Amino acid sequence: MGQMGQSLGRVMVVDDSATIRELIALNLGLEGYDVQTASDGEECLRLLGEVAEGRAPAPQLLCLDVVMPGLDGVELTAKLKATPSMAAIPILIISASAQRRDFELAQGAGADGYLTKPFDPDELLAQVERLIAAG
Image 1 (cartoon, rainbow, N blue to C red):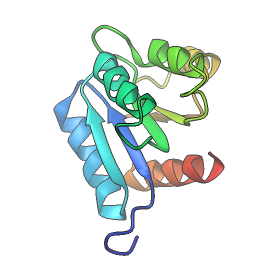
Image 2 (spheres, rainbow, N blue to C red; image 1 turned 120 degrees about the vertical axis):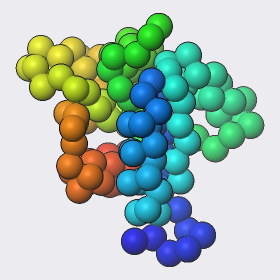
Image 3 (cartoon, helix red, strand yellow; image 1 turned 180 degrees about the vertical axis):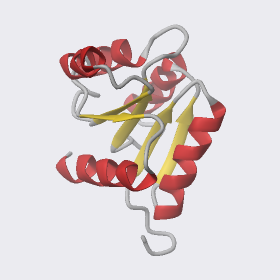
Image 4 (tube, rainbow, N blue to C red; image 1 turned 60 degrees about the horizontal axis):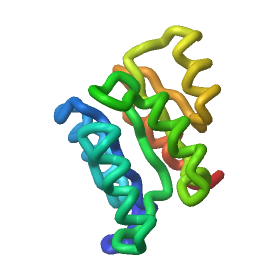
């Protein structure tokens, strides 16, 4: 558990389901992470634009859903990994699909981790910790 006032890292959670966004944010927040949320890929890009302009601190990790309206998580991953200022931010894909093909698509787009829903909160925390430490 992080000490009060001391964040373990900043994580942006992007999912079009408010329930899942809140569940992930709650799990991470209780552990001591500073969590920011976005409801879709467009909002994520807008928030990251503020980071690029120096108006907001950069997240140390992005947790992205795959199936979202507009830009899906795989397209968003590819776009971010192709943007020099964002390419270094680790990306954890959280998807309802356990299909090998979806895992490979996410990996091919540059995702650093993959977690299937429904997920075990301990597994989520382990992945987040690992990716932030590696980043």
